[in-house]
Amino acid sequence: MIERIAALGRSGLDILEAMGRSGMVLFHALWAWPNVRTSFPLLVKQIYAVGVLSMVIIVVSGLFIGMVLALQGYNILNRYGSEQALGQMVALTLLRELGPVVTALLFAGRAGSALTAEIGLMKTTEQLASMEMIGVDPLRRIVSPRFWAGFICMPTLALIFSSVGVLGAYAVGVLWLGVDGGSFWSNMQGSVEWGEDVMNGFIKSVVFGVVVTWIAVFQGYDTVPTSEGISRSTTRTVVYASLAVLGLDFILTAVMFGEL
Amino acid sequence: MRGRTLELAVGGFMLIGLLAIIFLALRVSGLSMNSSEETYRVVAKFENIGGLTVRAKVTMAGVTIGRVSNIYLDKEDFVGVVEMDIYKQFNNLSSDASAAILTAGGLGEKYIGLIQGAELDNLTDGSEIYDTQSALVLEDLIAKFLVGRVSDEP
Image (cartoon, rainbow over all chains, first blue to last red; front, side, top):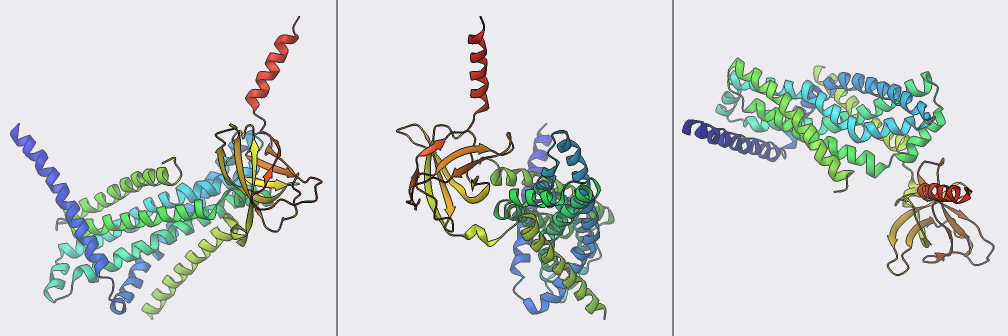
């Protein structure tokens, strides 16, 4: 009995400790930024790995989600004879919710897991330790550019996702199902507010970007240096990041669009 | 050469991101410079504003000429007070113009429709529109209709 309580307390302490370590990793990664000249090529390389390589999946899923939204929306709106509201429905759904959230989930699966596995393998093969031996700070050299790359790429990807989704909806709604193109765009422009919808969605994607990259980088840096440990922390990255994104999305939505 | 293609790819990525934000700004949200246009404020009191919201359109002859900027209750007369910002370019509305709360498409969003009057003086910043027509509240209409039907019966 006592042992169980002790184990509970120990796991609580472990969680607290992990949070402390992750906070320190984040702090160091941010602190390490100012060295622009040497960091910039590293950053470009990471933006390529994190952003450019994620673009295919983002564009394809954005296109399909936009098209599906248009199909479903058309079916429902058509029943009330208001299918010209399709544009505004698709645009608001994409900009406010689906753009940031689905991008963050895909980003966690595509880029986050890769970051964790990469850093985890570096730790397991003691590359990080040997870097420290020769006087290179692994947080600065490895973690910091990856963190900043995620911070930059995630909002960009979310913007691309939303745009492609709107275009997909246009293709299905206007070109295929025959909604009037003029009212599709004008209804959209009438109801979408730059500050309210586009900017709030952008803020969401920035927050998700930070959280997902932070979790991914930390899980890699903190992995148990075995092959099993890497697999576990990669899984954990995807699970934690997805849960964090969905939970934060609720809070952010409540603050931005709710009555809070 | 390898580094060059990498940088090109990243540059292209950033460019696409920039295009996306421009697309969202201009095409999707219809952002234009009108939002920062100069306005003057006009007040109108309504018996019932019935679901009018802040940022609703103010129109004349169907053309948007302003936005509702504030709605509150007059604590003495118990009427809804609606403040609207009207674009400066429409500065020749007569002071006896009338305002009505209308509903787009019968069930859609509420907006204010102004109708030009005959007076030669113009509405200026802070002036009030006296001739107002409240929102059509569907429940009231139904209630009246039902009461009317009951009293008609022999």
